[in-house]
Length: 305
Ligand SMILES: [Fe+2]
Image 1 (cartoon, rainbow, N blue to C red):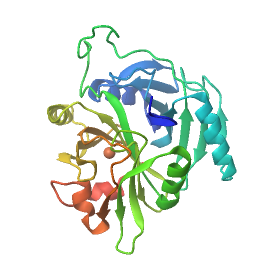
Image 2: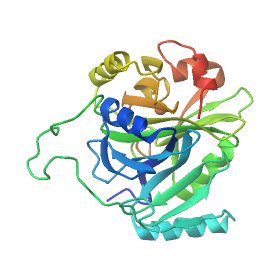
Image 3: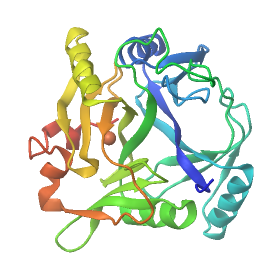
Image 4: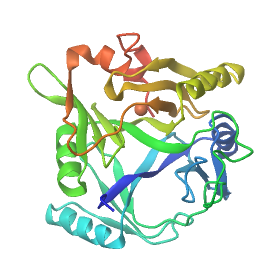
């Protein structure tokens, strides 16, 4: 196995105002599968994920993100990374196994942008609804947009450069694409842990905010059908269907009932360690974010949770 350390984005825990309304949105429309819930939290997964969950909804008074978690190859990676964080005088919190249903022990720390990052090595596997021997190509009973797997998050906050330095040096992330100003300041960074175009992205902003979470759809045709569902079900839409210049991904942005931004994402490319970083001038940010429109919409910069 060539991938060591951080393998991929594993799960994200977000806050929602009404748990029942959120479960309805994420299962019936986004097409995630509910694997467990209590009166405080609900656990969901994309259909083609094997782990117990990739999204946790927590009922709270304000929307936003509690944390995003990355899955590492083994328990020894947690110990090694914790040691390297402590060497850099970064506080690390231990979260015992079982705090989230099915998930082993986690470690947590805060990056300079102000967001909480967590790492874990083990999660109960519940399967993707297909047998491991001679499977069909999709399981019965899929709903809505049929989101297949957790893709990435985009976060706004101060200190993108320092955050990139930390995630690169300790967690082994690579900058697949970035955005720089005329005087060379990096105001956007799209980081990959392994083979995706990005597992996490940051945009420089005055305070720590949550911009969106994305799930993967298999094709442009699935993106089109997602647009049909957004209109049919009167889901609040931000923009799309359109395409990103950064990542070349096909996309729609829309909102859950609490105002958290969702994305359905497809296309894009695969990242390999010898792929060079692609840099965008800040003056070209419109084309970089919304390639077809060539300019940002008002919501992209101003609406976060
Ligand atoms: Fe995205």
